[in-house]
Length: 119
Length: 115
Image 1 (cartoon, rainbow over the protein chains, first blue to last red):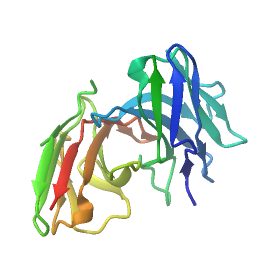
Image 2 (cartoon, each protein chain N blue to C red):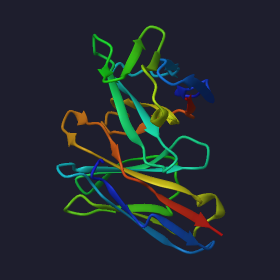
Image 3 (cartoon, chains in turn red, orange):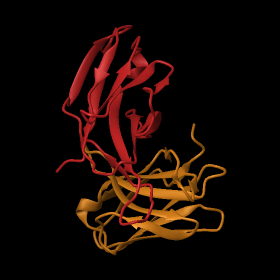
């Protein structure tokens, strides 16, 4: 079963508008973290935002916010006031707290969503 | 910029050869994770090194091996290259503590092409 599912292969948004990128996850671990990364065509993976499973409030970082719905196991990224430079691939990723009693930091990524911002 | 560097940026090898990729972690970080990203896919976890020891491995064969040095830089070695090893190889550094691991910050990647 997919641990991270991003159902939107591609999204289009007009400059200055808001856009939501969907992410659902699957885990039985009560302790986990959810991340969003941006990958421009250059290839570098840029960290955007983090949400911990025990965090009471939705994470925000500038124009990025994470709509965390724990019961639904969803962690959607909201980008407000889109800019042309936001055009890139966006990945949702999960880090589970423990595996076999050992804590390690493996990230499991989704397939990504290509965002195109139109002027 | 994250302060994570990788070398080389691009590499072309032939099937059966061996390759070594290098990664320098961000200052203050003691953990390096390696990922393979095939074209059009999300990155796949290869392994993680924490304080010079392998601390978790993904579903990759033993011909993928690594090292972490006392300064926390790291190498990824791939023996007997196959065509399917062609990919973008990303390393990420983070701070590992007794309670877990912090956010991973990625380098620019090494693009490997196997002919």
